[in-house]
Image (tube, rainbow, N blue to C red; front, side, top):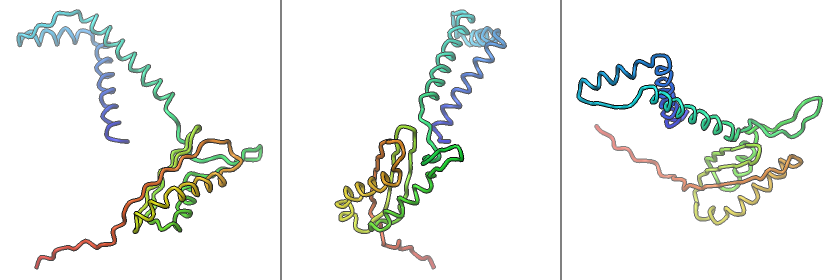
Length: 184
């Protein structure tokens, strides 16, 4: 789980914790107002009204999060090739990654990293690779991308026509060894 997701979930959890405490012990607000009055901080509003609006805000946030969960696309673990009564034949995402790495290994690319986003509506392939001669490889990138897209289309032939998008990025590979100073 990403750090930003943890922070957002922590804030939601604290909000719900405060909301539950207010529902169970509504007199806490009155005690907090009395405590603040001792420090000459006077707040004039009704605790029932505060609890009501706090509950409405929590309800709206819950509905919003629920809709977000429903709309968020689900990544599939594999691509089904054939489904019959006897069973199911599928190509896993790992198999597709290995296919892409094999196809690109002959194109003067090394350290190939493939990230696949496989949903019901689209298949996106994000590829990052190193090349010794970056300039020459960048000129060949449209051809490499076209060939890879065609190979993937051939591999997934006969399956529903979901668009395939290939995004390739090439980094300059450094062959220089880092010099380390030696202390004697």
